[in-house]
Image 1 (tube, rainbow over the protein chains, first blue to last red):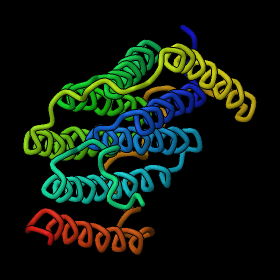
Image 2: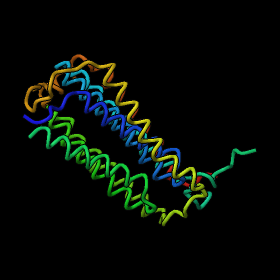
Image 3: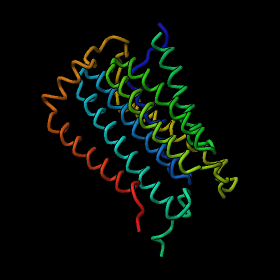
Length: 103
Length: 166
């Protein structure tokens, strides 16, 4: 047997994806890529839920993973709808050029 | 075998995640995000979550990414101009990120003393029958609330994207 994989490895993978998503969310200016980073972060959450579901031999984690997927899909739909409405008004998808509320 | 599969697909997921964040063109980011979703589906299969893996492929790699690609093509979003980040920030940022991940991994190893190995096939409660049974009996109320949430999201998307906002 090779080096065994434990739940900790999945949690660390989740932390890595969370960090990558956070960096993308903070550094990119294209709103489409910011939304993709949010999807990465939500997937990191799902890995944690499913990994601990396996660890405790209970399926509640998978139920919650399904709810997280549903919320992520709703968020993507509404976010992209907002983006399209914004693009109609401002002709841009760069988050630093959208400063309507800046005083 | 499990070790190999985990390492390969975890590496694909992290690599594609880095590409998602670092690519200048949104289409490339979207294609890499499909790679992340696909490799995560394999990892869910390794954990015994068959229904979640199928949902991941159908909903994320299918529906959500098609939505993203449609919006990218609709907006005709081209290459993003390089930002005004200074060189010291770039040079410091990536090593500091790796250090942060290392510290977090070390703390997780300390906090969660798990010795059991994740073996493929050890958890059999993730099939559609088990998940559906729990979802429609014990967790029926959250399920219905999620349906209301999705209805509101559909209405919001139609209102926002449907007609001109004055």
